[in-house]
Amino acid sequence: MMKFQKTPPWLATLFDEVLATMPGDRRRMFGYPCGFLNGLLVTGTFADRVIVRLSEADRAEALRIEGAEPFDPMQGRPMREYVVLPTTVCESADELRGWVDRAFGFVATLPPKAEKNAGKRRSGAATKTSPRPKAPKGTPAKKRSARPRG
Image 1 (cartoon, one colour):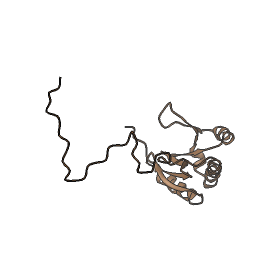
Image 2 (tube, helix red, strand yellow):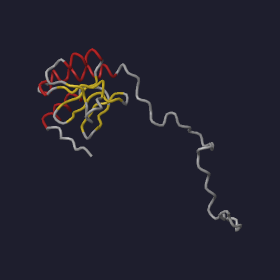
Image 3 (tube, rainbow, N blue to C red):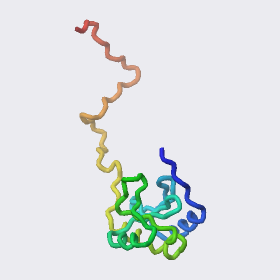
Image 4 (cartoon, rainbow, N blue to C red):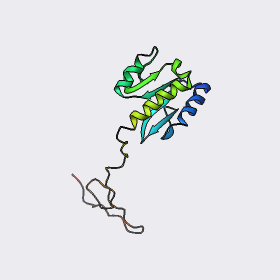
């Protein structure tokens, strides 16, 4: 299992301050603090940097900043809408807030994440794939035939 570097305390504090001004939920992903909106990841820290999910135009602009790069946490499997902001952006609360605000603005235009169990059948009706109901306690089990197989 890959072990990730912790976010430095100064960045964790700054990121929390920026997220406090944004909508959505706060959760952890990859062990790092992140911001979510409508169930979708918007932003988060990753080691000593911050990732943001951006529109195509904002992504292109962000990638022109020296040190910015596509987010590729698993080496070779980049998360295509995410950009890792360079530490120079993270040193300025206003600059970081601007990029995080753009990320929340973009994610607000996306459809909410569907619930994992949204498509599952909710009625108690038995289906071909559902297990057989258990017999009530005290009911004798079916006896196997004593007839030899073969």
